[in-house]
Amino acid sequence: MPNWLKFTNRGQSTISGGIGDGDLALVVADPSKFPSTFPFRLTIDDEIVEVASGDGDGVDPYVISRGKEGTTPAAHLDGAIVRLNITAGIVEQVHSVVDAHDVATTGVHGVGAGTIAKTADIPAFDTPAIVLGSSAAAGDATTVIRSNSTIAAFDATNPSTQAFGDSAAVGSAAYAARRDHKHAMMADPVPTHAALTATHGVSGAIVGTTDTQTFTNKRTQPRVSSAASGNISPDMTADIYIRTALSAACEIANPTGSPAQGEKLIVRLKDNGTARAITYGNQFRGVSAALPSTTVISKVLYLGFIFNNDETKWDMIASAQEA
Image (cartoon, rainbow, N blue to C red; front, top):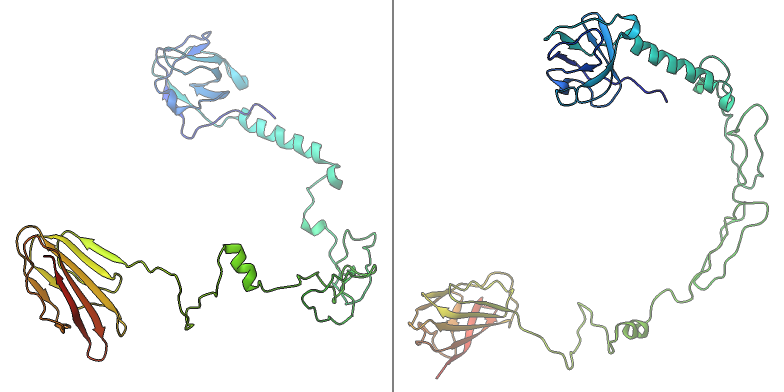
């Protein structure tokens, strides 16, 4: 690859300090306007110079060669304009590389002299024809690939029913595959209950979401919602609501969600050393006793409710105050 001359857009600055007609170091006011890699050519007045290295500042001036592309080295004054122009030498470098590519590619991959081959130079495909049960046919000398080269397709045998436990059946030598080709199948497609329970280390019947079944030796852990203080708004995502240190009156609001007939709700209350008032939503009512209206200072109070779906009421069936 050639050592390409580098470019920047709108590259222009000025000379700092001026140079004589034999100087080989150049300092410009703003080196950032020019490439940071080399080489590149600069035009100063009527002279073209080529920069080989350097930062272009007073510490590390550009190292230049003078009088490029038939121009004459000359002295240039401080403040003279320095430009990075597209010159005849740059254009000639591009032309030489393109010409060299044309010579290098002639005869490669079957490309003759002149223009590079294009899609119109490739022989067209014939009309395709693929028939079940036909044999393969190769392309001829005039085309690289014939699109009507017949592919050995599936044979005409009707597919057979494949069952679990079948052995594999292969195609014949004349065809890539037979339509009645079979894959070997596992003998038992559905894992048995015994296999599932052994795998997961469990025993007994599997529980279905809609089945009527009896649990034996099972523990159901209640869902708990607990806070130090605040009102209680049951939403059926917890079974027990706890307040450990009420600092203000507490309202137990009507539960939201979709409670079922007989669903249970437990509330446990305790104040923070001052008795606190307790109020209830209109779905709560006392059955075994009246609904408590206040806490007893620093004593735990349990309230047990059960849902009466027929009357949309939460009936308190138990109330227990710490002694």
